[in-house]
Each structure stands twice: as C-alpha cells, then as structure tokens.
Image (cartoon, rainbow, N blue to C red; front, side, top):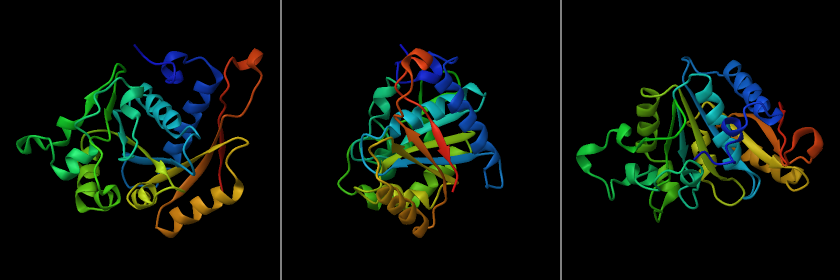
Length: 233
C-alpha cells in the first residue's frame, strides 16, 4: 500500500502535489547536462528538515511524467528510503560499492534496483551500514554506479545526508548535475544554510535552489501541514 508520505501519488490533486510537479518542470529546464538524463542530489543542513520526504515525492513526480526514475539512498549511515517505498533494506548502495553480501557474478546495477508500487519508479536502498561511508562515496565505484544507472533510467534522485553533520553529501555533490537543499520553516538558521551552500560550492557542486519545508498553511485551504517554496540564488 502506498504510504501517506508519498502525497504526490496518494493525493495528486493536492496543492502540494502541484508544487512538486512545478519543481520537476523547473529542474528539467535547469538541467545543465549534455543529455536528457539527470542526477539530482537532495540534502539538508540537519536531520528532521524533511529531506527524504521531499526527495521521495520529487521521484514520484518524475515517474508520473513517464520518466524512468530511480531514487537512490546515499545516506549510508541512517538511510530510510526503503521504508517509504516498502522495499527491502538490502542489497543496496554499500553492497554495490563493497561487494559485501552480494553475488559477485550479479554486480549489474539492475540487480540492485527494486520495483516499487508506482509505475516507472525504482529504489536502491542504502544497504548494510559500512564502517567507512565517506570513503565509499568518493571511490571510483560510486561514479561507475551512477554511470550504469544513467544508461538504465532517465532520472536519478539521490537522498543524501545532512551536510552539517557529515561530509557525505558534499562529496556526492561533485558528481551530480544539481543539488537541492531542504530547509525547515522556523527551524533552519540562515547561517547554517549559507554554510551548507558554501560547502557544496567549494567542493565543486552546483546548488540549484532551496526548498522551504514545513511552512504552516491554512488547514481549511490545504488540509496539510507542509508547503513548498523554491528559492533561486
């Protein structure tokens, strides 16, 4: 059963669902890569700002547009994407990168992609928690994995770690087309947000915009406690 977190699938007529579709359109126009394939990283400053909720719904929006989409959990420490899509927690990214607990003869990326209940949408979970997440994400095998995926799907959504806690997402930002930062209304501080932007840009990543989450709105008008805002620098 589709979880209520996936509002774009659960309630496609809701205003928030339309906001995600508008975001999808904006990201398509802003794609700077030479081909139609996109790799989009979603990160935040701290936990609890709604990063996984946002990345999951962006993935649904792309899938609904007929794009073969894969959401990949690159939070190798506390990844929870598999719970949102009712997927198995393994094998995942860490298993692909290390070769641990997998059949070495089946290392094709297709063997790590799990189908979801939604057409065109696949998920690759984080996998088993490794002792060295940062080292794995900066390894040549990470680039190899993304290149394999680009030959398999149209859009790749990466759900990363919060930037203020660890450097994992900053590392990954260098090898993606676009990076989105999720900020929480009345929670994320401007100086924290600026630090996160600077860290990504210093690493060679491109910050496409900021998504403002958890903005209180009239329950009478929207019936939800979430809203979306996109800020272009």
